[in-house]
Every structure is written in C-alpha cells, then in structure tokens.
Image 1 (cartoon, rainbow, N blue to C red):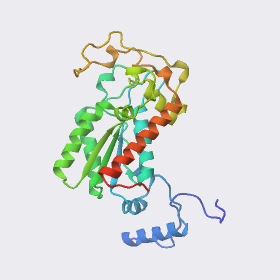
Image 2: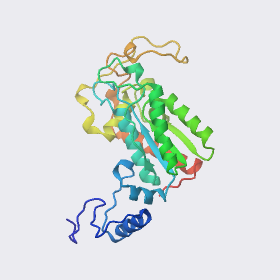
Image 3: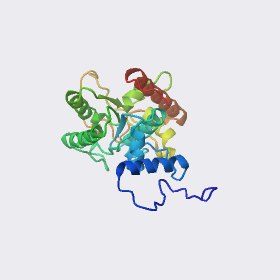
Image 4: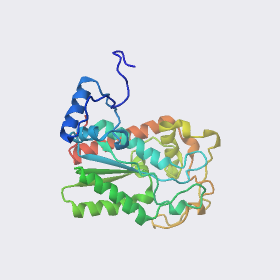
Length: 288
C-alpha cells in the first residue's frame, strides 16, 4: 500500500459505472492519472501498457522501435538469445531518452548458417519478412511515421532491408532505418577492445563485454574459451556462405577472455549516444 492507502497496482481503479464511450473513457483515465489514482509505468513497451496509456503516449511520439534478435549458438558461455537480449535493451535505453514506443521483440530470426549447433532456432527469410511486415503495418495503422529496427543478428539484415525498401515505396511520408547492432557497436570501438581483428568475432571480446555489462547473471565466465579459425581466410573481401561450424567448434570466433563489463558499458553508452544523435540530426527527434 502507498502512504495514502491507495493500491500500487498499475492502471487499476474501481469505476462506479461502466464507461462505454471510448473518448470518455480515455478522458476519465487521464484524469485518474493526473490525480494519482492510477500509477503510470515507466515502460515504453506495448506489451506492458494498456490501450488507454498507449493512446496518451502516442500523442507524444510517432517513433516506434522494433527489436529483432535470434536464438542461436553464442559460445558455451553466453545465452542462445544474446542477439535479442541486446536489441531489447538498446531499444529500452533509446526509448527512455526520446520517448519512443517499443513494439514486440522478434525473438527469432534467420540463423541458417548456425543451425548445426544445439538449440538454434531458425526462421525462413520469407516467414520472417511476412511476420515483421505485419508488425510494421500494424504500427503504421496506428500513426507511427518513423520506424527504427534495432537488429541484433546479422542474418536478419537482408530481410529488414527488403521491408524498409517496401515501406519507402508504399509510404513516402514514413522514415525507416535499421541498426545492425554488432556492426554498429564495433563502429564505436575507438581504443576499447584489445584482441585485434577478431574483437568483434562471434561471441568474442565485444559481444561478451556487452553481455557482461547488460546481463552479467547470464554469462558463465568459468567456461569462457578462445577460438580462432584454423585456417586464415585468404579472400576476406569476398562474401562467402560458410556455416559457422566450418570455422568454429565452440561457436566462438575470437578472444572472449579479453572481455570486461567495463568495456561493455562503454560500448553500450557510446552506441546509445550515437543512435540518439542520429534521431536528433536526421529525424529531428530531440531527447527528452
């Protein structure tokens, strides 16, 4: 109970009479919020708020963030959902700074090249495209004009690219962009990592550092191992389609032993600041 005897339950109150008119209901809820009879959650995720609170938040923003991840091998020391966990947390941090709303996190993606490792779940590109497309169409229906995909898995990049192009063709007044998380974070690596060219390898120094900072309880540091490809690629400039199992037995490519939570914190902070700068300068969305 609160000091004045009210229940701390989110959005709960007793109505003497049912309110059937939608507009009147929204007005009634807003009055209850203003008087403190309803306690607002700080969450910006659609799954956490009611439709009446959604309508109030929606008056303040037309930016929706869509986190996308994967369920796949991430070395023996990191969780299978690392990509989605990162995307979800970045979405929260960005939304808190600019007042955006966060759509449903898409937990699985196209992990075809990793599906020889136990626990990996892969979604066909056409299925992922249809599902993401339906999410976006729903967001557009409710008036969002700016869609930011925060994508934690490189295998999803081509599908999201197609969706963004489709959005632009069908809705000339809508802005859309994609953050390819690990590539984006690597771009902020100015003097942070120490393990050389494999610092951003799969489940390597950068990835492990970020997870140590964001989700330390999910990182098993006692079984961290370093692994590099047995044979160095003589043609790195050519796009190839090898499975991860052909270059790594553990799902690790790099030196996660170099990882620290302090490095991860710096990576995350720089990345969030950079996204905020983009939203401010390119889309004219100012921080709160």
